[in-house]
Image (cartoon, one colour):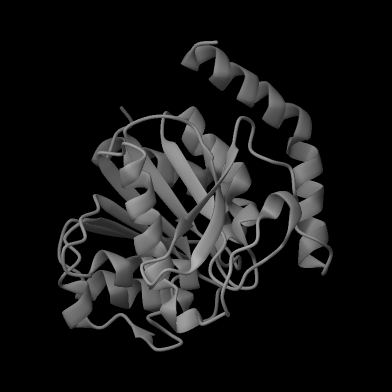
Length: 255
């Protein structure tokens, strides 16, 4: 089956399971289990973080431009799966994974190690190396909340080259990871900072990160109380998804 056929099948799949996934997301907010519907055509993978901790995730889609999706707390990689399909349909190679110490089990995967959240930027580095090893010539980092902070810290490391970083509700400081002006000055990739107006300090942090970052950069404050990946399923879901997909199409188009 060619790429067009796979995209058509995935679109039909989402049309059938979308209502179920939405219901599951609502249940998750009430304390139930997160949705576990796999992205169609995804495959289980594992790889080491920069310091050797073994991480588990899933790879979906094809292409020479890879998107690494890093989750928020208390979620895991499954929170990204609906959007991972959107990205795969757009022609990207997409990696979701569980940070160290996150072990939802089953198809959700089980990463090793303790939940040393101040070290999760090393997991992002491992993810970058992994997709590079799978043939990615360009890499985009998208992170929710702590995943966004970790993505920016990883992008600032010496010798690391990524093409764009997108954050959803990333805090300027988290568990010892501090996004100060010195660190941000080393992130020369295109940057898109997204947050909601009703999300405590997230909007202020997004504006501050934007102000302290070198170009190219953009900030979008959406009218929502949702946080992190919840923005992609809340009242601004359509706008947020379109915003990210259009931004990537402009800055790092799929190939």
